[in-house]
Each structure stands twice: as structure tokens, then as C-alpha cells.
Image (cartoon, rainbow, N blue to C red; front, side):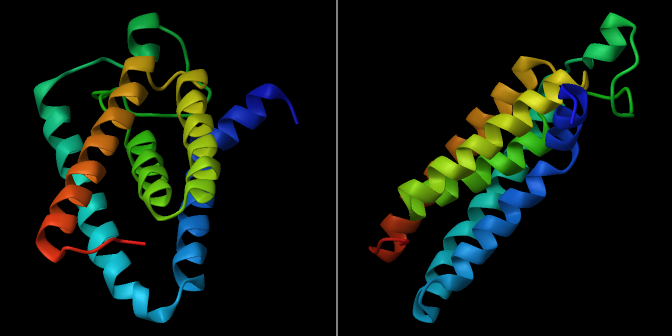
Length: 157
């Protein structure tokens, strides 16, 4: 596999591995923890999405292939590049996984970083786009975690 092929895979499809890993981890946990975990993870993910949509309307960053006048390795619309949806999703998953289990979190962060690097490598995102996504996700998940602990006085794990 060439480096281009690896990063195309990372940019386009590796996020699915994160989704599967977190889903499998969730279902391998005791059934009595499912509700508690879902009541944290779903709002955290939705909050990250909402913050990402808000950021998209507040800041415009043309895609690298638009400003650099080149053809990216994967086709993409020449719209706003900030923030990166792929990086937003995988970093939210990684942050949730980290709060559930540190070892799980490490594996998910490795995948998140590979997706972020892949999005930059293939020419559809700037570093700022993926870094912003990571920050937005982390803030959303941590604020949701704080609210969850405050409202229900319990841990999520």
C-alpha cells in the first residue's frame, strides 16, 4: 500500500473503525450501564455537532485545494473547510472513549490523529480545520460530562 493510498483510506474510511470500536466497547459493558453511557454519549456527540455547525457559520476557511489551485487526492466540494466533520466525529468519539476507559481512549485518539492527518494529507483540510475540530469536540464532551455529573451526581463509566 502506498502512502497516498494509506492516507486516502485514513481520510475517507478510518472514522468507521472508531465508530465500531466505541460501539463494541459499549455493548461489551454490563447492560445496566448502557442507559447511563448513552445518556452521556449521545448528548455529547450532538453538542459537538451543534458547536461544529456554529463554528462553520462563524469562521470561513477555504479548502487547501481551492487556495492552492491543485486537485485533492479525494474529490470534495470547494466549500468552507472549517471545521472538519471527520475530525470532529472521531475526536468526539475519542474523548468519550477516554472518559469511559483510558486504554480505549488511547486507541481511539491514535485513530483520530490518523484521520486528521489523512484529511490534511489528501488536501481537503488545513491543519487549523482539524485542530479546531479536536478542540470543539473536547470542549463539547467535557462540558457535557460536567453537566452530566452535576445533574445526576454519578460517574459515566
